[in-house]
Length: 81
Image 1 (cartoon, one colour):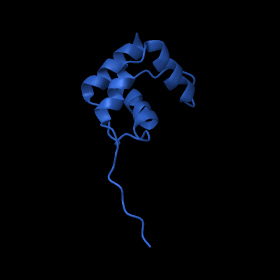
Image 2 (cartoon, rainbow, N blue to C red):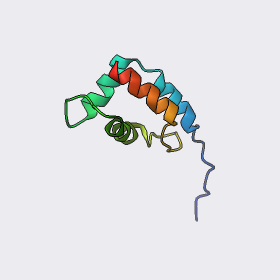
Image 3 (cartoon, rainbow, N blue to C red):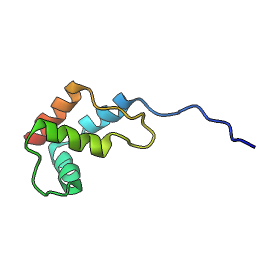
Image 4 (cartoon, one colour):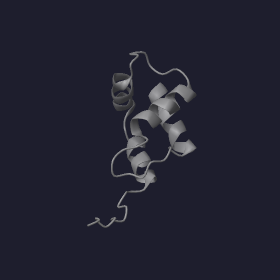
């Protein structure tokens, strides 16, 4: 007997990215720099984008999607501060 497919109860990607945007600069550094193979901070926006997507791009319970450009820039500015 086949199991019925349940509808996706995933939250909006915007909900996830809004929550991540609420992190402090210190929290971002702790999460991003600790998870990286390199202990050095990310120095350019493209590398930062790749790290963010690698870490948060497929969080369980959220539909996978890249952050809106405005959120990415907000995170980048906070991270660099």
